[in-house]
Structure formats: C-alpha cells, structure tokens
Image: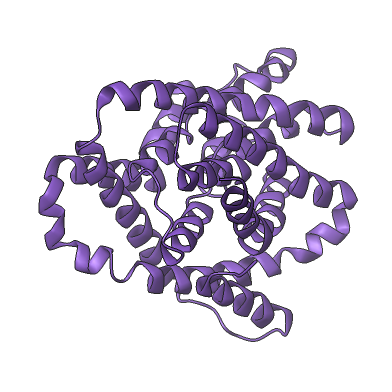
Amino acid sequence: MQLDIVVGFFILGVFAQLVRSDLRLPEGLYKSCVIFLLLAIGLKGGKALSASPIATLLPQSLAVVAFGALLPLVAFPILRYVGRWSRIDAAATAAHYGSVSVATYAVAIALLESRGVSYEAYFPLFVALLEVPAIIIGILLAGTVAAGTGDRGADWGKVTREIFLNQGVLLLLGGIAIGAWAGDRTASVMPFFGDLFHGVLALFLLEMGRVAAERLPAIRRQGAFLLSFGVLMPLLGAAGGGALATLIGLSPGGIVLLAVLGSSASYIAVPAAMAVALPQANASVSITLSLAITFPFNVLVAIPAYLALVQHWS
C-alpha cells in the first residue's frame, strides 16, 4: 500500500508541530490554497458535467443526497447512546460526519490520477450535494433541545445563507457552474488550475498536518471514545459509499471516491453552519474528531486501502 507523494507533506507538517518548529503557512497563502483547490475541483467537474446526460446524473444525484442524509442518522445514536453525549452535541457532530471534506477528496483524486485510475469526472457535483443534507438533518436531530428549553430554534434564513453562501460551497458550486458553461473553453485556464493542482495540494497538506497535530492533546484529554468513533464511523461511511457506488453503476475509481466521501468529515462548511444554527454545541470536540482523527486516518490509511481493495476485487 503506497502513499501518494502529497501525503509526505502532511506527515512533514505533523512532524514540524510535534517538534515545536515555527513552521507555519502564512494565513494569506493558506486561504489562497483553499480557494485554488475548490475552484480547480469545481472547474474540472463542471466541464465534465456539461457533457454528461441528465438521465444518468439525476438518479445518481438523488441517491447521493439520500446517502448524505442517512450518514448523520447512523452517527447520531452512536454518539448519543454509546458515547453518552448530550443530544445537541451528538446532533452537531453527526452533521460533520454526514457532510464531506473537500481536502480528503482532493487527496483521493490526486492518488487516483497518479495511479492512472479513471473516475467519473462530474464527481465534484456529488461533493457539493453532500454538503447540504447532513446539516439539515443535524439541526432537525437537535430540534427537540430547542423546543424543550423555550428557544425558538434555528434561524433557518441565516442557516440557509451559511449553507449555500459560505466560501467553500460558493467556490465549489461557482467553479462547477463556470466549467459547465465554458465547456472546452476551460482549456485556457487549465494550465494553471490543472498543472499546479498537486503542488498547491502539497502546500495545503503541509499546513493541515501541522493543524491536526496541534489538536492531539485534546484527544488525550477527552478519552478513547473519540479515537474509536473517529476511526470506526469513517469505515461505516466508506462501506455504505462503496456499496451505493456499486449499486448505481460507478466505475472502480468512482467506487473509491464515493467511499472516500462517505468516510470523510467536514471541518469547514459544517462548523460554520453549526455555529449559526446550534451555537450551544461544543464545537471543539467536533473539530477535534474530524480534523485530528478522521482526516489523518483517511489520508494516511483509508484512501490507499480503499483503492487497494477496489483494485483487488475489480
């Protein structure tokens, strides 16, 4: 099981933090990397979307949305009844595991492309679709708390704005829309967004490794359940994603990617939405789970393992 070269930069970031180096990407550069990756993924997917038949895309998209709604319903009872978390914390964290990590997806496509494994190029559409249902389900799962405390509940206007107009979703959907509109004309910008993708991803992962390692003390303080859930829930999501991908007829590369999306957990879009909808939730524990446990597990272990399993059984 061979790791992609970009993962080496993640490991370097972890090492730098553990030895207390002053290595840190400037904030402006980190934000630029995020913007670049979201637009690059969106543009490529949008171009493919313009050539894809709606008869294929519509049923697949509906199945993916249903999958995104199901994942927090699986995570919630584990957090609530096994972990014995409060209802609101369990609901907020479950929403993180129903949504996706674009960075995890970027690592997966980098690995597939480096191995010459093809996949459905319109997959960024699924990434965007999976951002939304889990947030809604998470808020609904926590709804009885608001009712029981006399709170009026979530401000759905603000929540909707945060879901659809936060930076990550706006850039990804915007890239998809531009790519679909431009079609083959995207060739004029792809030398930038295509050729530099792996290099920018490497810089991004360098900083992500440092940030993930920064949260390791929180894992030691909060017990073994965090570690267990942060590994087992991604495996459940990956199994569901892989089974769904097989059912709707995706390619081997597509099976890997949907397993990766099911395995990942959001640490950008969902935290922002939960801060608006469920400000009472403990955001620290959700971020620690998704960023310090699930993200490294996926990058270092799960993604290459999923690819190896799919190639073995294909």
